[in-house]
Length: 78
Image (cartoon, rainbow, N blue to C red; front, side, top):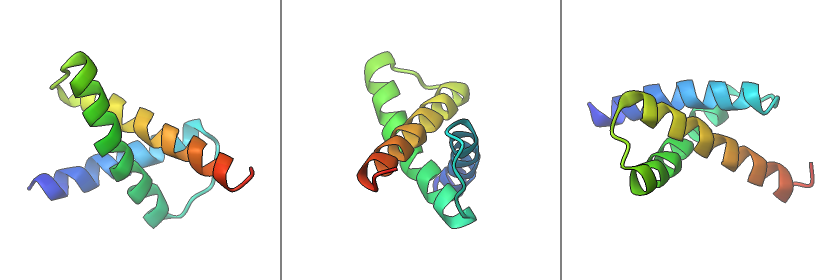
């Protein structure tokens, strides 16, 4: 169940992050960005703020995905 939840939250976070950052990405890229963002953002928020709620996890996932998108754009020169 935790893996399924990570995919669901990752898809939602990736979708929101790609829309907020105004980039076009495929479904697989969006989900992977969201999942990675969920891991990064979730760890950061839980560590700093000890946030355990679903809303906090989603916010952390979106912020993490946005950070990855920003880094990805900088690395490819966009």
